[in-house]
Image (cartoon, rainbow over all chains, first blue to last red; front, top):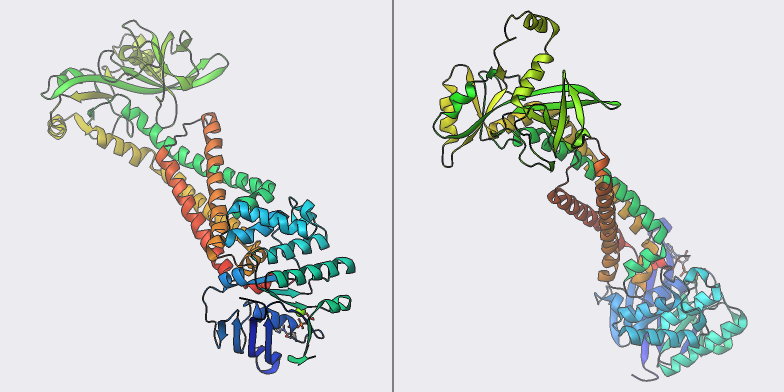
Length: 230
Length: 377
Ligand SMILES: Nc1ncnc2c1ncn2[C@@H]1O[C@H](COP(=O)(O)OP(=O)(O)OP(=O)(O)O)[C@@H](O)[C@H]1O
Ligand SMILES: [Mg+2]
């Protein structure tokens, strides 16, 4: 694995919801390749299919047709080719979503180390890595606190730490900076960029935030379910 | 990292409250089991007390408990001479009410011949009845203490010993006295016209009679052969110990037993539904978190573990609280509450099965949940 590897390869993927009268074509024949080290912004008006595309790449939504190859591994070709999609997500994909979705009964640190626990890390190592990441994201001092007591920005940074914990190579983010002020938003983007190059990962981010456009290598536009590459 | 425990600790107050509620329900279930057992045990106590092999009673009756039985007092001698009989003792039962301090005691008076079968097997406190008149051995539940005196009929009796668990099938505690005292008491308490007759010197009210003769057989003797022989006497009937116990259960306590048994069944069904509902709701409330777990890559094993462990902890805690509470309060009940380890274990088994079945429903819902639902809102 190296910088330049194709990590995400979406080939002629289409997705429609419903059928007949109620049919909505969210994606039509989308082709997209993302290489290791790339940081890409996915732009487009509301309802253009951004979340749909992200969910398909994250293996939590079935495409209607097409092929998806992740990190050289074909995962979808008319049907899912792997039965352990969750393990695939655990090892290869980090999600950062607008709603942080932290587990309310775990502390910030435990929310992060849980992922490492599931991935089979030794508990001590997991705790260490969680602490490191939280410190890095400037929320180390909130490590023993439950999500209910975190501010929106803090919770989002903990969620980012969780997404990055197991060093996934594909990081998917749906408006990750929406809850952050512009200084922190840029900080987070800088951090993601740094991680992308360090871990030879790629980052695909849905965003409306023009303040951070300069942090991306590539801006991709979706309109009516079609890509219009710039 | 144990998610089940972390989640419980997160909502500890609520979880404890739920366990406590379930515990109270289990207390009721255990109380009902105990009352049911107590009813049966109490009913049998009176038959089991003399440790008899055969009961000789009046012909054509199922005496002396299910029906009245009256046989001549000298039947004992006749019976005692029969082959295979090791010991025989005449016995007599009556229920009396007697004032004691500021209360009225309802007592089940057992008259027996000291030195022969029919008396209490174990004296818990004090001593057994000697040869002297007007001595009592009383069940603890009477509230009488060694040294107390109580007026029965026209005579004052002294309590010389205490026993435990002696009562009739209605739960009235027993007192033991000599057969002679018991027969005198019976005469004193006989209807007024009979007493007038007796005072005129018209002879005994009736020739001295007893309720039954209790027989212990010699080792190796045949109970069936003995009862068959005894039945050849026109005025006597014989029942083996087992027959006597069955009669008591079938005729005396049968309705009460069925009543409680049915109620117990309903109670168990209600408990099962309540447990299932609690566990199912507990899982449903966590569906979004379960979706998140799936999203970050948690395997089914982790999710099933979370649900099943929590429901087992809940069930165990409810069972434990119920058991503790019933053990604390069972002696407050006016009648005996008897809990056998077997019953408690069976209840534990039922709870485990219900918990697993309910978590099965929860697991099914959890397995169906789409990880994408974690993303909404
Ligand atoms: N589960 C669903 N069932 C039916 N239609 C859906 C579903 N999810 C999305 N859609 C439709 O698919 C289209 C694309 O939705 P998607 O959520 O991908 O848009 P988006 O670009 O993420 O929009 P936004 O910027 O508002 O988040 C929209 O028209 C939407 O209404
Ligand atoms: Mg969206």
